[in-house]
Amino acid sequence: MSHGTYAEQLESWRILVNNLESKIDNVPQAAADRAELRKLTDEVQRLSAEIEVASGQLRILTDRRRKAAHAARQKRLLIAAHLQGHFGFDHPGLLSFGIEPRARKRRAKKAKPSGEGTPAG
Image: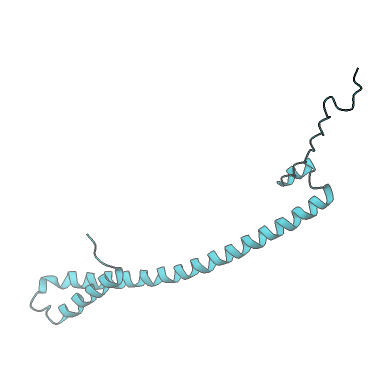
């Protein structure tokens, strides 16, 4: 069962609390519940405001983390380039720094022509 958004629920609770104020003499047994509903409504509104502030902080922190991670990746690439320049691109010692050495390319040996150039006889 959907109750609507918190904003919609909050508005509904405020209407009930405010409209019951003038009629509370006719329904005195609801006075304590009305007071509690007013407190709960205020608490929900306060918590909603705190969530909005936290959500904004989350966005700021997420953006800062993204930028820091990008800078760290760039710095890692720069250091890897320094190490590759020092050791060479295919040096196995690069593994100790978490850098995968470039695989050496091996040339296939040329196949000797079969039977050509040999004296017949």
